[in-house]
Structures are given as structure tokens and as C-alpha cells.
Amino acid sequence: MPRKNATKQDVADTYQHVYARGHSKHRVFIDEQDYITFLNLFERYLSPQEAKDPYGIPYPNFFNKVELLAYVLMPNHFHLLIYQHQPGMMSKFMQSVLTSYSHYFNKKYRRSGSLFESRYKASMISDPAYLEHISRYIHLNPKAWREYEYSSLTYYLQRDEVAWIRPKRIISLFKTPEQYLIFMEDYVEQKKLMDILKQELAN
Image (cartoon, rainbow, N blue to C red; front, side, top):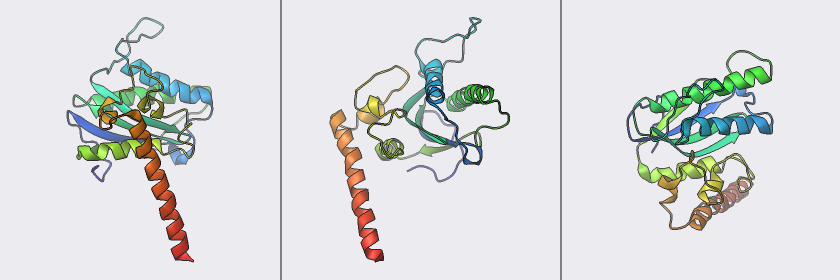
């Protein structure tokens, strides 16, 4: 189970559920380009090949130091599931992403100050059996989760593949991608039934 606090457990070979919300619950993604820019930062920092800035200076590279296992970007917050290979790497990765994105966002929308409510919150997942449920929780954030563009679900269903998102640790818990989809749909149906039952009991 995740640790029930926001303290970042800086330990090697650990799974972390990472969460950040916009300051005062304001939006952090306003148009399509904002979402794409954030995803491009994942690519910049997590690709096997080191990326460089326009002056040829390498950006920090966290490939095989941090693995991004799942993500969803919502209008005013995001969730990530991360595997940290080395102590301190998740913190450096998150700092790189959030600093770069905040600079982009503030410049684009001519604003200043903190974009996010806090740096970010992270809970270490101490029970590996809970991982599949965390990934499902992340992917079910959007109401139209099946078609949502800004989550890692498409990679779990093997509709696409890129080097910076690595769902294998989770998807290997299922025999096929279709079984993962069934796992998602079963929860949705169960929740609908529970909501109906609660409504009937309240009448």
C-alpha cells in the first residue's frame, strides 16, 4: 500500500505515486500545446539518447535512473507512477520537468509566481501487489478515459510505443493488453453498481 503521507521516501528501487496540482487549483494545462509541451519534457529527460539545448548543451538525462510507468495529465493536476533506480533521481527528474514547464507556462501566459500548489507530493508504494490498482486509478481519472489523449493508457494497450514511457513492469502482471482493459472496465462497472446501490439505499 502507499505510505499515507506526502513525505518523499528517497530510496533506491522503489515505486512512487507522484501528484501535483495547480496553485489554488488553477489550470496548469490550458490548450493542446501545453499538454504536448509537458509530454515533450518527458521525452527530453527520459529518452535513451541525451537531448541538447539550442546551444548544444546537454539536458540532464534520467534514462535507467528513473522509469515513468504511467501518467495522466488533467487540466489542473497530474498523476505519475515512477520507478526510481537510484536515490535522489526522482527528485532531480521532477525538478527538471516542473522548472522547465513552469518557465514555459509563465512566459506563454505572461504570468509570474508558482504554477503548482507545492513542488509535488509522492507516496512510496510498499506493496507491489498494489501497483496495478495505482495504474488503474491514474488511467481512470478522465471521465472519457478510453479516448483520453493525455494518459499512458494507449501504451498499455500497445496502440503506440515510445522509449520514455515504460509500462512493462505493470503490463507484465497481465497475460495480454486486453486483460488490462478488462481490469479497467470491471472497476468501472463495479463502481456504477455501487453508486446505484448507494442511491437506492438513500431513498
